[in-house]
Length: 459
Image 1 (cartoon, rainbow, N blue to C red):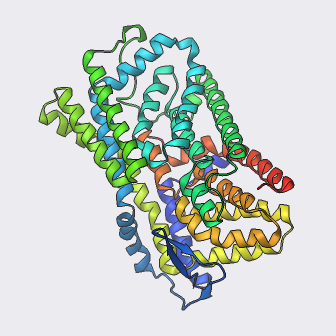
Image 2 (image 1 turned 180 degrees about the horizontal axis):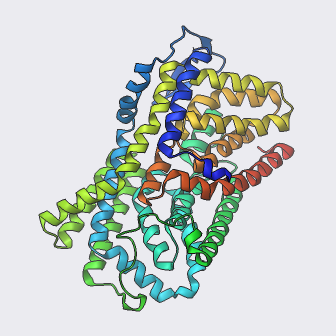
């Protein structure tokens, strides 16, 4: 039996992690760092860790954490539903199908590998410059494109989910990781962008190569592809490529869609809109598209419910995964894990310390999947540790970014990842089989950059 055949179902996998987190509340001492409010965010105060009375999680409390997890993740859950509804309306209007069909008709199927590479970088750029959850609703477009080219839903996820996640995780301008890290380290915001940009470009280049390689293999043996048997109903093209063209209504719906996204980005960058406002924009786009496409109220209602049914499993997984965070916080062991990991690093040589610092952040990423949350919880601890062993603060932040950013692509507790995979209709276990080797390759390259940063004393 091959290793990937032993991967449990995502529901079982997460339940196992929930049980593990519950057991850890008995095995690890409870402890807390003191925190201070800076610019509206709670930041850990270095060297303030202290043991507190144990707060182990009982069986009833463990199951109570499920509902608390869904409550905590309600904003992400709703943005999944809102994005699904919006895409359902766009799909019903035939705008996406006709747009994708027309693009492929004009570019030609003989350029299919070039299209895959270009779209991987397009979604990567969205991750670099726009954000993460902000791009959820764009993921299904890659599904239509992939199927139109002769690919499958796994390729669609590689293009969109992979591109967004790698781009966001290694972005030299990521405000949630690099930006907060530089604030904590009292350094110029987004300094060192050149080295990070090269690393991000290499990560996306490797992903593009990996996607094309998978595409060629799946075309050779469609029955053996990882996407075989996945539900792609309603996503494929219904006509011959040469029959596609854009109608006046298609252009109108496309303008509504792009106008709504432009409004969303304006609000994000100027008024700090986040998930609640993004969800509202998605719903407004869906309603206006339905009206512009002259759908009846019954058609709009049925499309809404059908779209919710499609994305519901992914929305469930988001809340389910957030349960782990609730248990760790209730058991007061998150800070203990960070404290113990930092103590290990102090005793190591400088190169080993940098390498294991990224590993430590990867471990913490499983328990604190929020990039900003992890930065605020661990960097105030790791930066002084880095100072002690001789690491520059720029290198410490790079180690953090690698540990957090690269492993996002395989993190079952990251709500945004699970949400985007649900929009592509790709189960997490199949995604893991597809993306795990790439994660290893990118980590090796990133660690090479990290060792180079240590060698030159990167400032």
